[in-house]
Length: 323
Ligand code: SF4
Ligand code: SF4
Figure 1 (cartoon, rainbow, N blue to C red):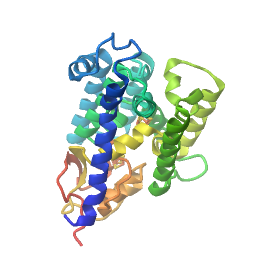
Figure 2: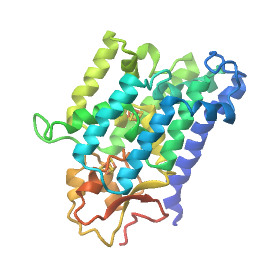
Figure 3: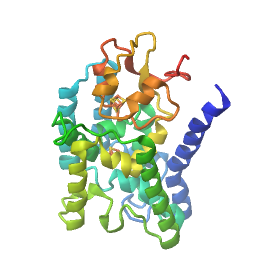
């Protein structure tokens, strides 16, 4: 592997490891669960393992496993995917609440705790390990197959085949990711200087409040804006704002299973690029080193007439241009 090809994966691996280690480091500084949610126990591997055996995480794991099996066996298609996203929304958004803590708080709060010397809860540490673990097993298995707000955006995007005033938009990844990273950096500066993060402050960037059935104006405006944007853009909140999306995008460089191109089968018809809602499949087909988020939806796999795309174990050099 050329030296310049390993910079990005190495950077992502280091940053991901730091983010995953943050709860433990924050716990070490804070010296306890603090909230009482952990029942006074320290946050260690045993208590996190016990937490992962709760109904929410077992069902989440089953959903991710089902997604992995459907992707591996290429049994996924647009209708099945939309139906399953409805199930994910109802199951994890309405019935088994993915709030308390929300995925967003599970990523943001440990960073705040680390910066301010505060404490984190066992539930948040467990959620963070769950998100990270699934994302390392398969690219975005959490975001693509468990997150109810991601599912809601995808349902809204997928139901109308055409956007009302023309084509659906694929955001240029460097711009969308630049915005997402900028928001994260601004939040980090706010945490360090005034001790609050931009996402959860007054709930201005935390749509997961929806699943707590808070019907406040700020939440209505946020969810309404994301819902309207979702008609035109695939998962706008995930691509532009969500810190969980940022973390799981980095973890994609570690994921065992990812969408891979079999170059020998590809006839360059570009049908996968035309039919996919995301900007990532073009980067996969072109063998780009910088890949936008892949939400493991399976649309490109289903679209390919020669089965050149598959959700397979990643190998170094896979998807690399042969020219
Ligand atoms: S990026 Fe955020 S909102 Fe989107 S699916 Fe992941 S956790 Fe959910
Ligand atoms: S590359 Fe795009 S279309 Fe293919 S599985 Fe990932 S998100 Fe879906």
